[in-house]
Amino acid sequence: MIRKKLAEIYLKKLKELFPKIKTPLKYETPFQFLVAVILSAQTTDKQVNKVTSRLFNQSKTSYDFMKIKREELERQIKSIGLYKTKADYILSSAKIISEKYHGKVPFVFKDLLSLPGVGRKTANVVLSEISGKN
Image 1 (cartoon, rainbow, N blue to C red):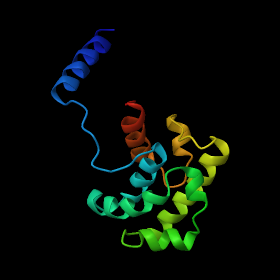
Image 2 (tube, rainbow, N blue to C red):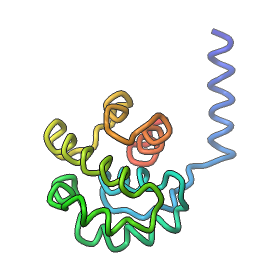
Image 3 (cartoon, rainbow, N blue to C red):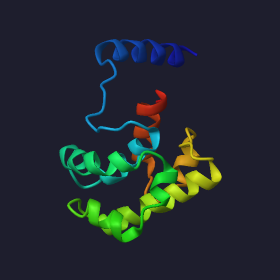
């Protein structure tokens, strides 16, 4: 019980010292943010923003991404490393989110982890940024 109280005190103080910092990744929808985070592996946020500024003009939701042909998505994200794998992850995640979650990015950790290309770090970043969960 004492440990829990101490942890709460420390957490409160840390939140005061380090207020929430907004991500440098640019996005308009939760699905776009998920895509940006998937793309950000092994590259810079600056490079991701360059690619997504064009990509997100035409595609905002998982349904929009389902309409993109794999080759077209690869072409658009080619300047980012591992683009073929990331294209697969994005398109597969778009399909799952559209069909299983009715187009809404799930805000449950285990559900996020079930998406292709989403590991613990990506799931935590998405939950923290979009829903404010830690």
